Image (cartoon, rainbow, N blue to C red; front, side, top):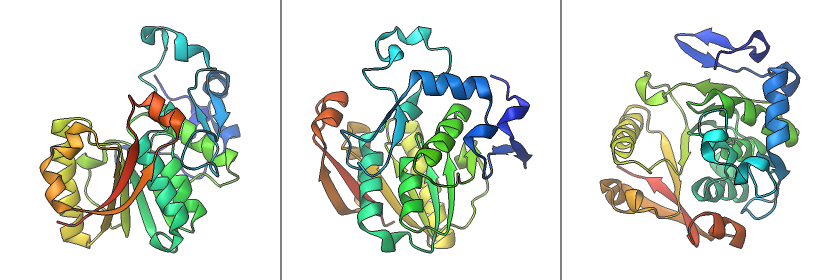
Length: 245
C-alpha cells in the first residue's frame, strides 16, 4: 500500500518515522477503515487503564475469512499476552521507565509503549514493520489522551544500534530464525550500551525452548484474564523476564 501525503511520513536514513502526529493528520480513508473495523476496548486484559482499538468478536473481520481482510495480517489488532504482562509491569513499577529512554520492538497496538509513557518515560520509540500498526498506535495514543510518540516502520534488527536505557519486546519469539536474530541483536545492545532488556512471553514453545532461557531472570508473572486465555489457546500466565547475558 502506498503512503498518501496525509500520512505525514518523514523519510530519514531510508526508514519511515511518524513524528508527533495526530489522528486528524492520518490518511482519512485508512483512519475511517480502522475505526469502522476495530472496537475500542479496555476489558478482558491485564491493563484496564489502557484503551485500545482491537479486533474483537463484535468486529466484522473477526468472523470473515482471513483472505478477505484487505491489508497484511492485522497482528497489531490483537493485544498479545506477552505485551499485556510487560504493560502491566511498567504500570505497576513506574521507576523502571521514569525519566528514561525506551524502545518498544514489535510494538503492535502500542500498549507497552503507551504504558511506558503513562509511567513517565522521557523518550519513546515504538517500532513495527507494518505501517498500519503505526496508524493504529497513533490512534491508540489519542484514545489515552497522550501525544503520539515517534514510530519507526522498519526492521530495526537491520539498523545500526542507537543507545536506549530500556528495550522492551513482547511476543516476539514465535519463529526460530527471528528468535536467533533477536538474541544476537539484544546481546550487542547490552554489550555496547549496557541497555536493560525486558521480554514478555506467555511461555510459547519457541521461547521456552530457546537458548535465551539460560540468560533470563524472571521479574514478574501474571495470571491472564479469561478472555485472553480463550483467545490464546488456553495459555494461563504471562511472564516478564530480564535479559542478562
